Image 1 (cartoon, rainbow, N blue to C red):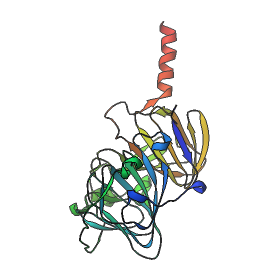
Image 2 (cartoon, one colour; image 1 turned 90 degrees about the horizontal axis):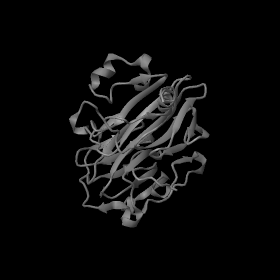
Image 3 (tube, rainbow, N blue to C red; image 1 turned 90 degrees about the vertical axis):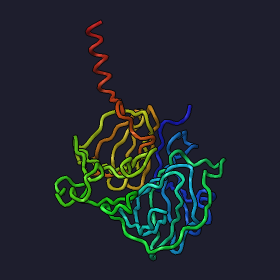
Image 4 (cartoon, helix red, strand yellow; image 1 turned 30 degrees about the horizontal axis):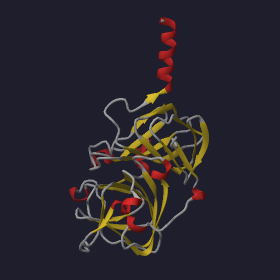
Length: 298
């Protein structure tokens, strides 16, 4: 039976040269934390690092690529725009869109990325080198500028309900601006269909000290990168304490739950494929309730 969940610790990270996944790459390495070898059908999730002076050739993928910059600065060139990305910036590169990465500054650039469906090594990592894009002066991500419509940025203010201001809401009237708050949990959408994604989503989650989500599962795969604090998580009945830098993944049908450990915890989360219009969550408590009712009625 294929694995239904994965837990990868940050101190176990193995960064390797990407090979055909990034043609002409110089100074680029990637930690593939979740992929086909783990039983994933929709998720190839990891962290990429680009050394100062590093770059890739222009290429296209037959999968969708979403990313979120964690540290350092990097330039991403696409036909839409050449953008100078800094920590907090995110975006989506649709299937078949030419793009190239280029390092800037003196610090290693690091970003998390989701490839969906997974890059298949047996098919050349589903990647093709194409003619180079012209080098142009990069621009910064601007959520109000339609020329950078495939990109966005997230700040600490976006994740703090008490600091949500009318200025933030006025920037862009979309779900990516709004903050969803419930049961001690705050969620801000990042990459979604509004941004141009078709196959996956990426969003930020924060739990208050009393935040928790009871056991449930989904008809989709989820990956989690803990960015701050720690959380007690269970996957199919096994409990783990996840800390900053750890990555986990839950397959379709994996029953999982989360509870803050006394301090705020925040993580980056992905879903692939995108959430269906209905029945995206199956909470154990609801079906236990039905069992109790049936015992009374039958």
